[in-house]
Each structure stands twice: as C-alpha cells, then as structure tokens.
Amino acid sequence: MTLLLAKFKSKKEANLVASYIRNMKKEVQLMKEENWDDFFFGQLINEGMKEKGTVSLASVRKKLKG
Image 1 (cartoon, helix red, strand yellow):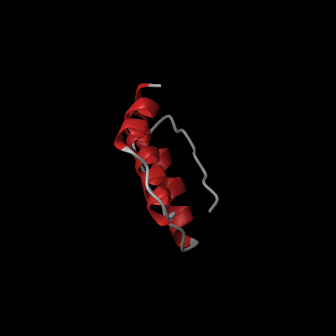
Image 2 (image 1 turned 90 degrees about the vertical axis):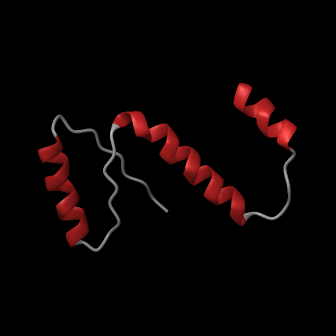
C-alpha cells in the first residue's frame, strides 16, 4: 500500500483533489489534522491483527507510555 498525505488551506481545495482521486477509482479519506493520530493508530492495529502471535498487555502499556 502506498499512502498519499496532503494538507490544504481550505476544505474546498481538499474536496476538489479528493474528487479527482475518486474518479481514478481510488479510496479517499478526508480528515482534520487532529484525527490523524487515531487513524494511524487504527491502521497499526489492523496490520498487527494480520500477524500471528500474541503480545502481553504489559508490553503494550510500556510502549504507549514510551
């Protein structure tokens, strides 16, 4: 997967570029900057769920406090 991030001055500009990308049959997600952390953390969780194995809760807490 290749990820493209772009920051726009206005929502109108972002919507215009998003419409071009959608016309190319690609997935688009528009979000405010304050939601990026949640999005990327969710992506990491999804990737981790695909792997086999387990991780202890203590090691996760340690990493988050990091």
